[in-house]
Amino acid sequence: MSGAAREFIVARFGDERHVVDAVRAVRERGLRVFDVYAPYPVHGLDEAMALRRSRLPWATLAGGCSGFVAAIAFQYYAAVVSWNLNVGGKPDNSMLAFIPIAFEITVLGAGLATAAAFLARSGLRPAIRARTVDLSATDDAFVVALRCRQTAFDRNLVERLLFEHGAQTVAWKVLDL
Image (tube, rainbow, N blue to C red):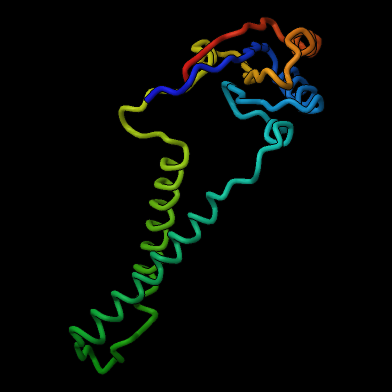
């Protein structure tokens, strides 16, 4: 599945401070950052890129609640409705006995829902090729990618802005993403 060819500005940085400063400067000019590649998480980069908060915790909560309800319902059905046994005169629906299994199934449901939501949202599936604007971005460099649009882009201004904020190299690339 290939899309239309798009033009990108790809700037390499050697330091995380310069990356955050450059992203802030680009955003202040009203331009949108396509992506930032970094070898490790950079503190403050998500605020500089103006990223929304993740909705992944909601998927985790839904999976955990579903796992808890399913575990309690199944144990109640098995112990009280389907196969009730009189064990030493104890009540059939002893909820304290259900807690360890309910806890484990809650954790399992939350973990599976988190993994499934992450993989579905990020598009990480088997046989899908990675979408990177620069293969050297997977090395030990910091890379900022800006998507060019003819209406709101002054190439010289953006290139100069990136060099002023510590870019080591700036390249123009046309890619099929």
